[in-house]
Image 1: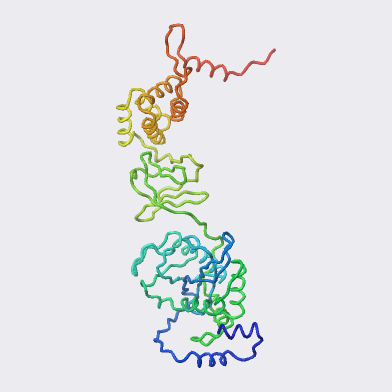
Image 2: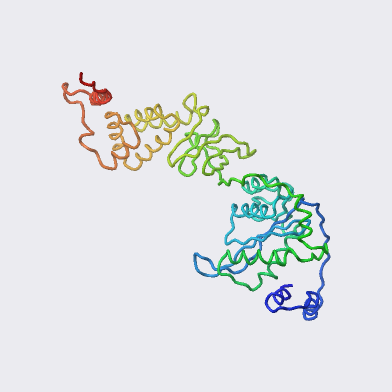
Length: 415
């Protein structure tokens, strides 16, 4: 087929495909093949997907030729195929290729058949496979479900296997391209000129004519494309929060030191039950260092883990133990990380220096981890370590309160 197409396009060959086929068959000789049953599927019922090796394309980053990956989706009834080229594969790339293929076809199938590659299947199991959550949700957005093949048994998706091999042996064999766009444009042209107009060997009908019958049976496309997200697992810390990209989000009570599934995008962060995938909490994205805890998740009393942490603080030192409850009263569960930060500071600078810094923080009315850390980083400063040594000198807090009161008062306008 590739030889005949090249002869027609490049040399103006006027002979038929069958004449070239007979000539090549005499050169190749006879071959023994195994019989495989044909799987007949209803209109719009099934599509098959797979990866294959694509052509050599110059990588814009390195300037060298590199092998691309060829994604093929083939409809089970009409054998209409969508072929897409990418440099790198990932979970999101795999899902985006499905979405792009559905939109090129103008609809989605009810079932997608695939093998057990990592981008789509986390745990292979012919009866109950664990699908990649992002891939599963993308298919659900288009109304499709995934069915995996047996391990090392590609015959269940023989139509797409044939489509991949046909692409490699016919339009792409021995070709190199200077850009991915050029390669994709060439493949699209070949698909329209030769792929859709060919007479399929099994059905004895033109692919384009069969696809015209199958297209109305495809599931309609949703109005909006899928909103992609990242996902992972996070452990709930002592403050009842999980960390996502340096921001903290509250989990329901009872999940401390347990693992949750987390999904996030540019707008939302969702916490899911690891066993049932039930949505537990949904938060708006926060900036780095920000916290988001719903009112119902705030503890009614001090949790046992926090009580144990405060008890450790009292054993560490007098002023250290006095500062930690102040932090908890001011910030509640959010202060747990700051208390842990005080322990980290004490480990770095020593408990004696940290005790002095905590005493100064309490004295000047700045009970905060940031003050203690900066105080220790810059060394003890004389103005910050004043003590009440004379009855005529009032407490520093009184001066501070007086200044705040006077600065808040608004001056009267003159008569």
